[in-house]
Image 1 (cartoon, helix red, strand yellow):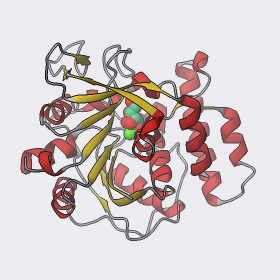
Image 2 (spheres, helix red, strand yellow):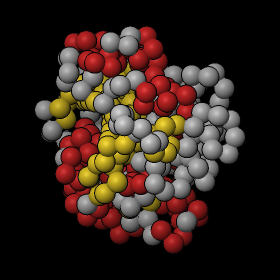
Image 3 (spheres, protein in one colour):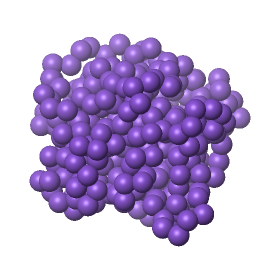
Length: 307
Ligand code: RIB
Ligand code: CA
């Protein structure tokens, strides 16, 4: 079993990623750290607790609040209300959870677990990189203690989604992403290069209606919202992208993707190119970039696991 920490900004596709991880026996979810991004950190924490309730997940999975603002202290990106709803979960109106967030801080939790399981922890980071960057700044030793960080973020060979040049998670805190990329920690980048090919379609979601439970109702509500939102932005696409679940998938089964070692830089200058992730002609490769994907293999695995 792979020991993982999920770092999330829950978010609809984050919720799907949590469900996928919790339903996967290959993964030992040691904790879920939260970050601002799609919503505020407080909302991401609340949503994560609610998702664990609806999944009827183990009470022992701690949820640890993290950063509520970028490392620079200046919010760059607004909440993603149009894609994820006012509440971040497609306005699903879930009851408040009785679970309580862990009393530690995300960065401290990441450090603590890396020290407890040297060389064995994979962080699956599917929001801005702020918690990871803060952990590295607090204790640079974790660069050597981590197994790797699998990041849903970036768009190395394709256009961005929040600006023509930038993907949302990197754009929300480019300085943090730059710190992680430059740190020397093994990084796998699951960016729009591959995630935009992994589509959830109307017929997939309709099938969940045949299994009647609170959980299948919840899945349908959030995914219907997510698909409507995607349809408004890009009717040609024919579905909505499984960004965050793919980062989990790559840890469950690395054969879903093929990676290419690259030196990837992050543009941190304010301006049109802010948050851009691009290949830099440099010998030392700092990131394994996912550029090829077996779409059918991944999507069918995800769909089978999720319900
Ligand atoms: O660009 C896609 C990413 O931005 C996903 O992690 C989604 O949840 C949003 O945070
Ligand atoms: Ca996310």
